Amino acid sequence: MGDVASHERRLAAAAVHALTASGVVWAFLSLIAAVQGDWPLMFAWLGFALFVDGIDGPLARKVGITRVLPGWNGEILDLVVDYLTYVFIPAYAAVAAGLFPDGFGLFGAAIICLSSAGFFAKRAQKSPDNYFIGFPAVWNLVLFYWMVFDSGPELVMASTIAFGLLTFFPVMFIHPVRVAKFRHASLLVTLASIPLALIAILQDLDPADWVKAGLAAALVYLFGVSLWRTLFGSTD
Image (cartoon, rainbow, N blue to C red):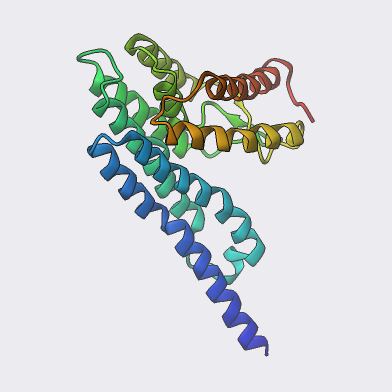
């Protein structure tokens, strides 16, 4: 029975790795949509990849994946997928959509890709209380807000430079799930944002004002808690 159980655990662990690896498929589908200029479909696939990224970690911990399959590194696999979906495809989409000022597309994309590579290479990405140290390269979300709020090229360029620089400074950014303080409020804000984002996607990234107001409120909350942690130290 022990061998059977061990075999079942290995199958479960392999399934979790396969789930994580499936992110490259959703990334490829989102890239095809971006090449076709279908931004809502691109965000739909990126959103699905984000959902997978949100559930594979808890599943991996549940099955004890590092003990069951020690020869496979799920963290590296996750980083590969994340760089595609959080960074590379959003950088391409920002250029293809003409969001940067004329002649600055390559410059903007280079800031996104290079600063994110620096963040992904950091050994200390999180503080002891699970805040990200520096901007955590969530360019998929930045791109979403740029498009939904129809940001002008000057704002896009300025925010790209700002977030690129903040990647390397000890500015804290909240992880809405893993930060213990305010967790209930953070989860509520995050869960409330999901249907709003879906509505925005279904409405071709031009949603009603109340949807934009809800998305803006969520952003203010997340930045507000992050600023509080940066200025006043640990919130635990």
